[in-house]
Length: 240
Image (cartoon, one colour):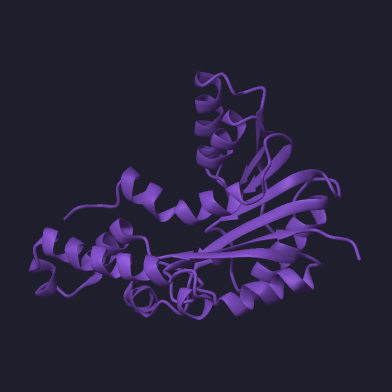
């Protein structure tokens, strides 16, 4: 059975890219929380920013350091081992704080809320915070997560995410959501009963592509866009 590929991963992360682009930063200092081996941190460094990739996985951080040297970006990106809820940085250190599909793997919703407060703390005044998570209102994905064994993932609604940001003193200026067709079809096929798994891959992908086009047509209608498989928000730290 086909596993999730790098192409699938890139498709799923389109929400992340759009939200970061909405911050209009061509320079500055960033902090990518839960960035693993620096997939996003290295991309940000390559476009002119410098910053830190934070993760709890020492092996992933080691791989990231090697990649940064190979790409001649080691002077632009540091790799730091830390949890999302207690970052080892001074208050108001970063122009941009990102966290892509990370807080959903924290122990509970309170830890997720605490992490967003921590992102706000280390963001500069008028700095940006971008977070993406799995959407609880996307029923197929939520159902599949319940059926999977040995995999923990919290799922969120847009309302929850907005509340956490508001409580952390962050003003949300963009909401985005997408139904990642390729990754979605792979995950669903992998978790379907054995009989249903016999559905030809091209037929399943065709069905998902149609659903994706329909969603893209209505995604600018906020009530309808709430059903996207992956959701996220971009916010600004504004003093009143």
